[in-house]
Length: 272
Image 1 (cartoon, rainbow, N blue to C red):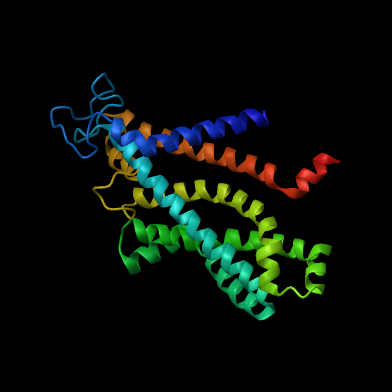
Image 2 (image 1 turned 90 degrees about the vertical axis):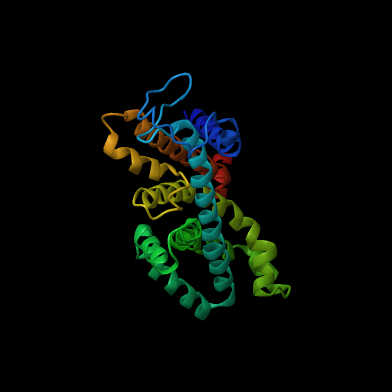
């Protein structure tokens, strides 16, 4: 069952990435093109997933929204990795005082819900893809920082770290050459967990009208636009909701597989 879950997660992820990359090129219509003679049209040969309340092709908007949603989520995850993992690891290596300062700020950020922090960033910087990506990076940076601290503390208790110190290795030198490779597996696993949460948070912000610009279709904005016409055009809301559920499920399954694959404690346990 675990193997099938991994294969399913990988398949969903590959399909989502391919649609985000090449989907807009194969879509039969422009995602912003309106057809006032085909309002809330059902799926058919011309419009594969139907049209919305102003005649826009749902499939074209779905694949265009996949590119926007995934791009913002990936940017937020990478930013969270850089802020949380890199800054947290360096603070741990430099000593107790830098560690306390950095992790006090991380605890402060962790106490705020991701959506609330995003609202504050958008209020300060304005709506758009960049403020949302920055807000996601700050919101999910504590996940990487706490993971880095747990693995760092575990690894610094190992004999190879004591040997490196005996031979005169500095703190940052040991971190870069000896600890970073062992931190990488846990942090990659954490990225597989954070990415679907970034997708969901970005969709919530888009649903509230606080994501990217209104002329840029995202899955959350598609759900928001189609909600008042749910009875007349259920396909217009069902398509982005199913896409959001499937892509989130795919990344969750893939992240779980990475966690089991890269966790050294589980590997050593299975070897025994």
